[in-house]
Length: 148
Image 1: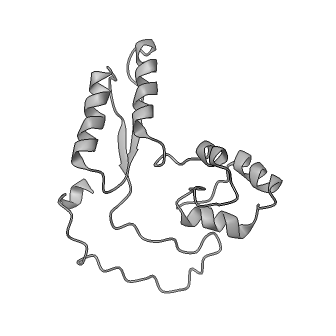
Image 2: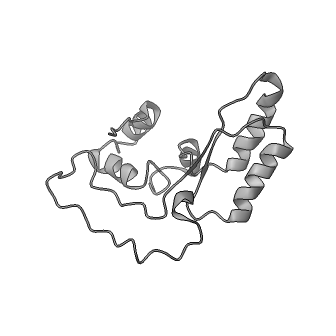
């Protein structure tokens, strides 16, 4: 199962702006934890609260490479990529990791091409019928099903 864990620092920021409401938190959940759509936050505040998928993954490689000389074995480095990542960009991430001397990559996380929408938040109606998703119409991608 899953449950909501609120970032206490974000919660405090929202309280200071009088925006700590169920509607705002549901909006954040609807956007996959992102606050980039909240127009009352400054660009600096949005930059602080980026999700793992919103961070430029090349920076993760830079920081991991900086740590590598001080690690005897390996570090668990996770990369987060969009589902529609270009194959060249993905190959370049791996090549850059190797080139920088990073000993291992732990997980490559991606969002699903067929990701279902948000169900309505913490107070969702669990008695409602789930939406029917037509998968057959979305077969224009090149990867095999296991590679999604």
